[in-house]
Length: 165
Image 1 (tube, rainbow, N blue to C red):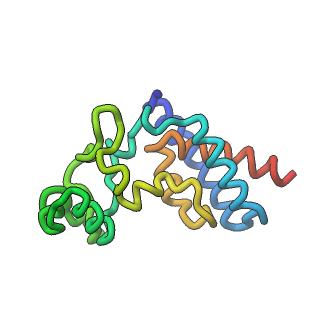
Image 2: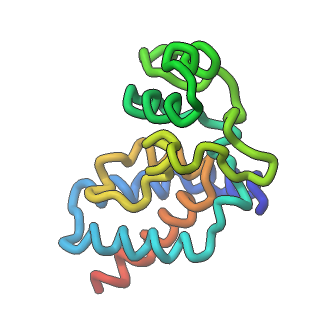
């Protein structure tokens, strides 16, 4: 998987993607959630996250209190120890990883805490959510990091026209 190529394409198409996503926000098609789910499924039949793991290498998820509780219990650690060892508070006052790539990312791109991973990791790249236009800014950011997010927006541009013609 050529991440540089994806990143270059995503940056080149940012204006086009932004315009398309803004259009969805202004005038969402009646069947938008259906199109989103279909497109998400279609993209993830082709894209294998284990071939990439760029999200785990370059961006850290936000850790909620529930995440911290669940993961520290799984690791048999005190929550305070888990936070001290792995997390820091960022400029938005969110708890995030101290270092990247993610400490829990294995050599083969699998996750050592997959069953209990943070909610942000479970939902990434957010291509299967209802009212997708509510996260346009995030989607544009994700297209540069995640090949699946890029493919998703590209496919959505085709599918919205296909489903509504």
